Length: 347
Image (cartoon, rainbow, N blue to C red; front, side, top):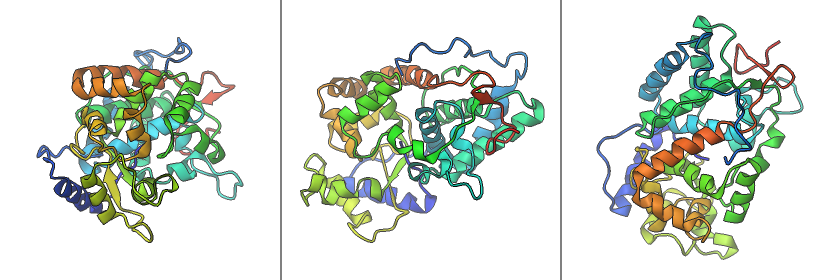
């Protein structure tokens, strides 16, 4: 759901904070479903005998990526979300399109093009390290799930146990991506319907949207909201004037820089916290789909609760990530495989 910046755009972030006259955390942490019964086969100790050091191995890569390429944090969280919502949590988003193929892979779908390449690189590095110690044992899907949890924790979010045992999926089609992902202008009705189709509740929608406490969106995802909201040729009236001013300075209506990004969370853009929800209450949500959560009676009350209680958000987020991580899990050779290289099908 989030995009990740190139760090030439860091100046943009400071400009936002300046125009909004908001405090900036000097800690400078780098940026970066009720499921139909979770599959019994998933367990925290799935690799206890076959690859007991898997968490440490993946952790060694994610901690380095966090230091060297901070954009990999929010990008990896987004990568996991986009993987699970299309074909289930099966690593199919990691597969590269085949040269000359008429059908592109998920990775090359329009909705996935803005995911920072560091996210893919990080998973491939982690896979290589794991393969060197435990060849042919650990799925790319599980490595992505572990890496995502690591990044959530590295940017200040909750630590939670990751259940493992996913197989890698065999299907990866770009044509299946768009309709299975939330859009920046999705209505609450559309979001609830999509999440329900994945076995996720309205509460899960609000809680998982809290991942927008870090990460960035490109201008194209909100340009209509600041210039031509719902065809009115006017800005969205439900946006703080300071935010509107800052966004307009970075994102012209036409011919703007396609690489310019803005933080989802304009108050603490580098920290995983519950400020996202307070921002929605204060009309400081970046995307129409985010801001809508604070306006709809079905989701508004939970937004307000989470805005006041960081501990409750962290607990709920850990539970929701566990639930989301069980969507459409593949098991067995009919539907799955264990790829040695996450980018290509095992042969």
